[in-house]
Image 1 (cartoon, helix red, strand yellow):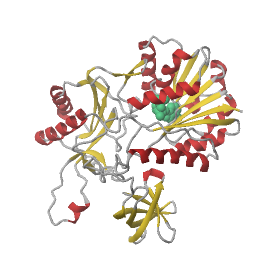
Image 2: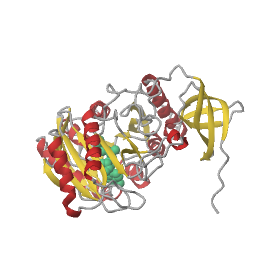
Image 3: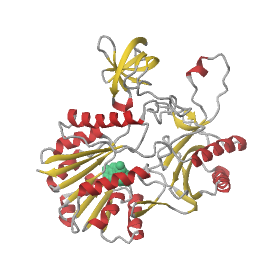
Image 4: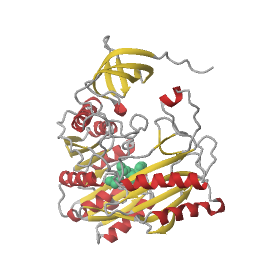
Length: 469
Ligand SMILES: C[S@@+](CC[C@H](N)C(=O)[O-])C[C@H]1O[C@@H](n2cnc3c(N)ncnc32)[C@H](O)[C@@H]1O
C-alpha cells in the first residue's frame, strides 16, 4: 500500500518575512504556523497551497499574492517558475544580497555558535550572463506547464533540451533563452535541438535508457572561445561524429570539442572518459595574474568575474609572508594555490580528481611557477601525519571543500596540524558553520566574508578567517 498523502489545502494570508533553506520563502499564518514556500518573497502576503511536511515544516506553493512585497520585481526570464535555475528573479538584487548576508549570520549563530560580525556581502557586478559553464540535458519528454496539463488540447509530447525541472529526472524544461551564460550558448543549444529533430538524432529517454543524445556541457572564456563536451548514449554508425562535425561547421567560436559515451543510468561524467575529438584539449582563462588551462572535467569557479573578487579576498585574509608554507586543500586545478604562489614560500595542493591535478601541474608550468607541489587523492587519506612530516606544518592552510564540507577526520587532522591561520572558503554556510564549531576547540573566527557568485539563486559563498587560539 502506498504512503498516505497529506490533503492539500489552501491557507490564506500567509505573511512572509525571510528566506529559508534551498531559497524558499518563510511565512507564517494567522495562528503562527510556519511554511516554506516557492514563489513568495520576503514582505509578501499570499494565499498558498499547503503541501506535505518536510523535516517537520509544511511546504507550499503560492496560489495568489494578495499584498505584494515592496522588494518584489518582475522576473526577466520567460522560463521563470518552471526551470529551477534562477529562483529569485522576482526579488530585487539588493534584497537578495541582504537575505544572503542574513543566512550566513544565522547559520554561524545557530549551527556554529559563532557571533563574529559578518562583513558586508560582495555583490556580483554581472547579474546575468555570469556563468562560464552550463549543462543542458536532452529528453524525449518535455516538461508540461500546469496550464497545458489542465487544458482540453491534445498535447503531442515533444523532445526537449534544457534543464531538468526540480525533482523530475526524466523531464526537461525546453529552454529557448537562458540568461546564465553568454548568448552563444543559447544559439548552440537551439541549433542542436533543431538539427537533431531535422536529422532524426534521437533524444535520450531517462526511463527506458534509450536514445542517443544525453547532455551537452558548454564552457566559455572571456576571449569568446567555447569548449563543448557532448555526451552520447552510444556511437552506432559513427553518428556522434556527424553531430560534432555539424556543430564545428556551424559555430566558429568552438575551439575545443570532446565527447563522452555514457551508458550508465545517471548523467554524471566525473567517472567517465572525456575523449578529445577536435581543436584544443583545454580552454584557457585568466584570473588576474594567473592563466589557467581548464580540462573538460575539471572544476573551475563558474563566475569568472567574482572568482577574481573571491581570490583577492583569500589573498588579503591569508596575509602571506614570502617564506610561508601553505596547504591548499581541495585545490581543483590548483587555482587558489597558483594564485597565491607569488606571495608564498611553498604551496602544497591536494585534489581528488586526477585529471584536475594533471591540469594543476600544466598550469604551474604555464605560469612559470616553481614553488607548488600537487597531489591527487582524497584529502582524508592524503593528509596523514607522514604527509605533514614530509611537507612541514603549514603557516597558512586554505580549505575549499565541496558543499558537504570537510570530513570529520579532516577536521581532526586540522586540529592536530595547528596551522596558525586557516582560510576556509565554502559554498555552503551550514556545513561550514558545522566545521567551524568543531574547529572552535583551537580556533577563533576572526572574519566572515560572504560573496555572491550566483545572482538570482540561493547559493552563497562565504570565506572564514580562523586564527589559532
Ligand atoms: C569547491 S571546489 C574548489 C576548487 C578550487 N579550490 C577552486 O577554487 O577552483 C572543491 C574541489 O574539491 C574536490 N574534492 C571533492 N571531494 C574531495 C576529497 N574528498 N578530497 C579531495 N578533493 C575533493 C572537487 O573535485 C573540487 O575540485
